[in-house]
Length: 405
Image 1 (spheres, rainbow, N blue to C red):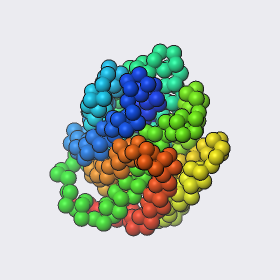
Image 2: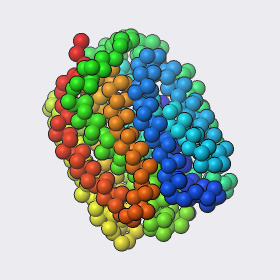
Image 3: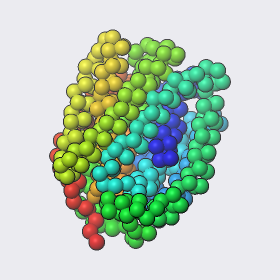
């Protein structure tokens, strides 16, 4: 269920980026106007991370996720009804308010179920679901647009989200002890394996969280990651279409390839990190150095991908770069579970807020960068930020809890 909701979050986002060329033709928006509309989601998504995480900590993931998925599914459908730039800006802003709580609350939902040595893989699998949604959606949306127009995909994906919200509320429980399918032996295994046990949490100790250097290095690293991610998520289909001169029919296929390679990166990065932790017991070796390897490869592969003259060669190198970028994400989301304990929802929300400020900057100013400097500069920036993230990981200590009793 958690993998599915991660998939739905990105499916609902990438519908807009895939439909952008057709929307611009019908509604007459230039690239700069469209960038502001796309950026509206990212700014609200970034700013509402902490309220979303707090909602999950306070009322529990069962009710919180059901509520916010219903909210953003409604605004997914409203996107198809908006006919002006102002209306689209407002709808996408409110769509971001709903999606903001998804990852922090989902992380909170895992904290009482997942063993310490399974966290990297669990987070890798969930993010793989997100990237699978990214990879599968462009060709599907292109087919729907060609047959039914650009508005229809928004209605279809809104319905999928509503069905998920109903199923989650029926099936999920905030604690393993509350679930009829969990027996005493399983409860003991979960609790001895490092999952949190509390039935509720008190006031979030923000003073302890914000004073800890690891928290700030984690946030800076995730800023770099999310800036790069959003260049791919929000603008890669448009880049393939307008910079590489690919037709709409082929654009969906080419744009999906790096995103599908990211699925493999999500799965393998988290899995490899957990294997290292299981064999060595050294959480910093498992988290820090495995993530540094991914960011380093991403930085190196992006440069030739940007300058390759052949479109197939460029896409292949972008696949490698995005695979390496996504290699790091399950690890990065395992760290809040490692250091945050029962406040992992709030810790991951703060990390994701800082990360998505980077994403908001990427989506808002991408169009301006392209107009001023051409299509290569935004991707070269992602290469530099990946290199910086590798350096920042040297200061992230996953072995120490940042909240003490």
